[in-house]
Amino acid sequence: MKLVVQVKLLPTPVQAAALDATLRACNRAADQASRVAYETGVTSRNDLQKAVYTDLKAQYALSAQPVVRVVKKVVDAYSTLRANLKAGHLGPADSKRHRKAIGSPIAFRPQAAQPFDDRCLSWQMDSRTISIWTVHGRLKNIGFAASPDQLKTLVAYRKGESDLIFRDGKWFLAATCEIPDPEVFEPVDWIGVDRGIVNLATTSDNTNYQGRRLSRYRRWQARKRAELQAKKTRSATRRLARRAKREHRHATQMNHVISKEIVSVAQRTGRGMAVEELGGVRDRVRLRRDQRGTLSAWPFHQLGQHLVYKARRAGVPFLEVDPAYTSQRCPRCGHTGRANRPDRDHFRCRRCGLAGPADLVAGVNVRDRARSAWVFVTNPSLQGPPRPEARCAP
Figure 1 (tube, rainbow, N blue to C red):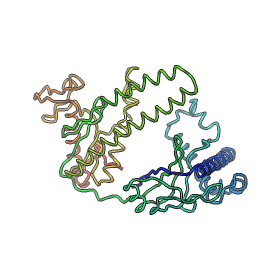
Figure 2 (figure 1 turned 135 degrees about the horizontal axis):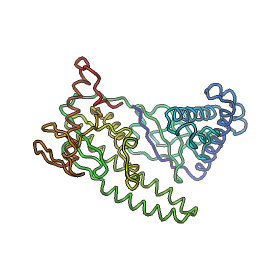
Figure 3 (figure 1 turned 90 degrees about the horizontal axis):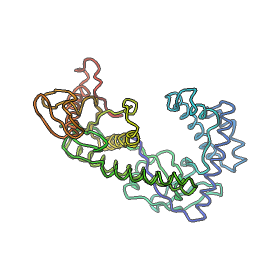
Figure 4 (figure 1 turned 120 degrees about the vertical axis):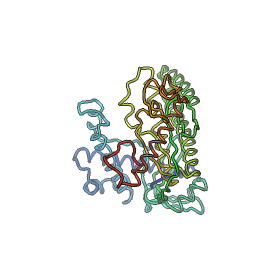
């Protein structure tokens, strides 16, 4: 599996100025290559490189390999645009967003990230420094800060490009590491995980991760955001951007903590992990106006991504099961009905009388579906018609 390790660079003011000039030159060159690609319709890497290589080297004082990386960045940007258009992510062809996307060449920010390969950038792990090509020559002995785990991963598995990033006044390098997938063990049982808004995650072990603090924090951020938006000044706009990043980091940290704990419990007890397949939930559900912001800010997708990659890295079996009626079905007698869940928090079966927290019941149902589905995943010969209720994580 691929893992990105991000380390913080510690350049001197002179080194930082050279890095800044390099980013700006590479992105000006990328803008020019993008205009050529847009006007000629050439998006093949080799053809575009032949068309712009000489001009970019001469005009922006770039060496050969940085020009190749710039062209590759432009080609990848147009490939992403075509994929988004094909998938309908930019709306129908007559929509304003769609027309804007195809109406002009792709532009790059002056300080957008720039990829460097091993010909342009080298790592000295023992001294925790890097050497990197810049428009002012090769810079050596630029320090970087990394944790012992990050350093160990970089030494053993770093492979491919590293991206130079400037964000919030700080310099970073994001290195791609190819980590071999551990063998997935045979689970002795399963942990069902129910994701929600009031409770971010509830497991079939009755471990509950409440979302009350996150919801309260986001309501407070929404009030501050409204106050800043009312000012309509440049300073308010900058503060809004900083607040948005801070809020995103807060939710991401919570998802990391929750997913790490769930995966560690599954690994320690030899169990697999199962979640509901919630793709397209925003398209399936119609909400009142006052509920739309809450659902849009619900970090369930990111939590699911964290669970997937952490489980894969730990060798924990992972399944996504059909979410239909998990909170309305009785795990003891199988009776399913809306009346089994009289309100958001409580479950009471109308047939056998089983009662308990609704999210816990949903987690137990997810676990039970994973138990039955795993038999067909591991023994395809037993499988009859295709079963839509479960699929393995990628």
